[in-house]
Length: 172
Image: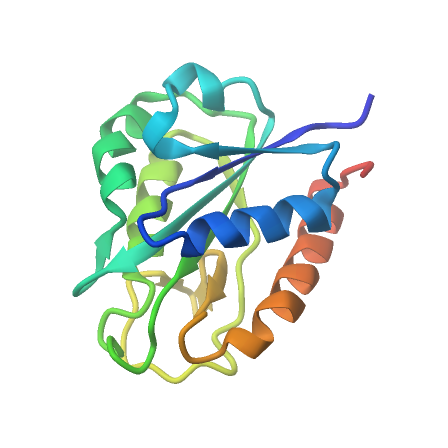
């Protein structure tokens, strides 16, 4: 049986939820499950070997509120041996100094779990000054700016999912 992927998102204005749905379609509807982190428990994450965690960035670099509440639980999990990829939403024009910094906060918590992190993303094509989601010249996961670059979203999702499939050697 092929591996299942759990997609967990935190969304207030449905942006991260919409991206979760796009990721589910790109991975395969029958092989990926979507969960709202605001209605999830630790046990829900532990059902999956492959996890995709997504958040939007709020204000000056904060993580989405449901994720903010769940971060202590996430940090307490032992995800050693599990594969985790991340995605984040942000607005590079209004918040160029904290662009997708919520993604960086989610990354820091995921690293604490011992999980193997995959799916870094090039900052090429984005215009911003600073981001907590940058490590070694790359974003720690897929970055979506649905406000200023909505027309690039589907292409970015498709390309990232293909890279993930190869990185994780998924039989999807």
